[in-house]
Length: 172
Image (tube, one colour):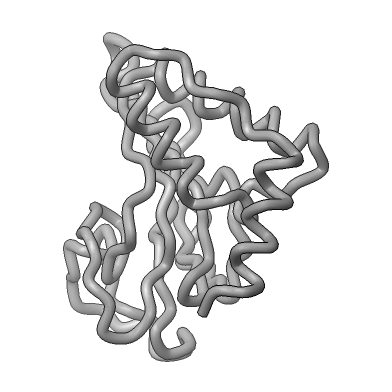
């Protein structure tokens, strides 16, 4: 890890040993104060920086959930969840703090009630014995749109998942 400051990685430069075209996420944990964590995803790279932070990396086209929470002496000040698809070389992307270079943003919600609902929906997908990273990206956009509008999203179903798997197998 180099020593110069890079605000896009939360103050850390891109590690030299990270695979090319990997989407990197800087994670931090300080008990009771700040928590940046991956709720789901299949990282292909990991590097510990110190006892409070590490960097994980995701291969192009993989999907992951990044949860950020922070509090101060008066209570919670940040509660958000972002679900992203890691981008490949030359793809357009949205920037996001602590994510380098950025990603295809499928869901972006803040505020504990919405974050909590997304976490419950992730649990429901896992109850179907489906890894949430393998769920149809359109489902995460659906959840984003519905919760942003204040409407309850539909639950992800095994049938929806099977249709996504078939569609993915025949489309480039």
